[in-house]
Image (cartoon, rainbow, N blue to C red; front, side):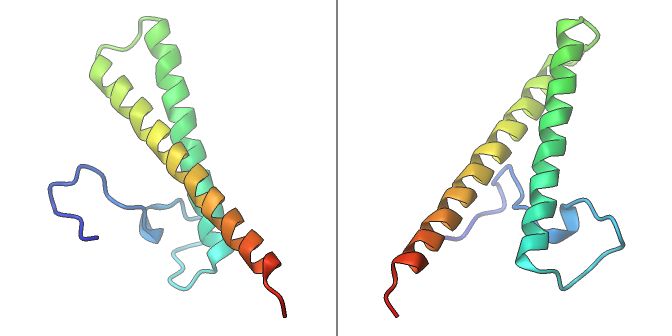
Length: 98
């Protein structure tokens, strides 16, 4: 499926994820998943922080709070779906007869 340029969200790539020990071009799948999960966790924490600031009345830009909240929600839903697909693939492999 081709995604046109008017799509509002960019897909996650390795360069967007938090890097700890410099930029690595060839990373393993597990490292990519760990970095992606950390990225989603940071988005969730940022959203929770903005929600707390909104409740305290310290935020002027209400739209930004809702945008960050939706970004975090979508990222979490995507992560859950990836986990489900990985578990389905694992279960399928376990059912294979050798």
